[in-house]
Amino acid sequence: MNTTNKFLSVILATGAAGVAVFALANSAFVAALPADVILGAGAALAILAFAAYDYSRRYLPLALPGRLLRPQLPAAVKACLGTSNACKDRAAA
Image 1: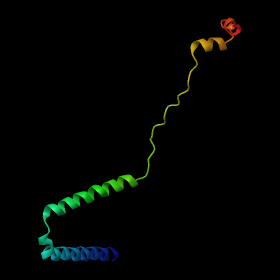
Image 2: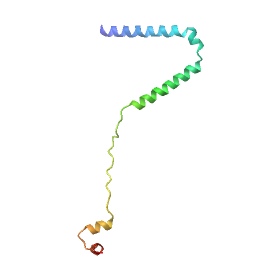
Image 3: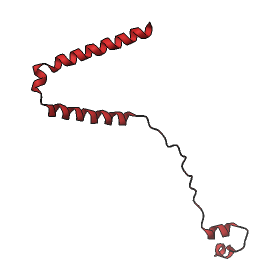
Image 4: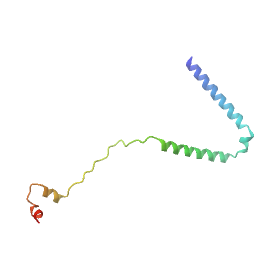
């Protein structure tokens, strides 16, 4: 019963909207509007609506983690930091 009521209400609402559109389409107001102006206004509204939708969507982070870059010391510094005596003369100077 509940499904039938929903189905009938959808059909009634669609029919009422269709009757309103056909009654408006037969009026002198619609006949006086040029079609290219209506098409241009509709295209502009569609572009603005898409821009507003794209601007207001939620930020989604990237799924892949970024690489962590760590700076490396030059080879000469690594040799001096080791236990070898290769850089003791440089440190003394």
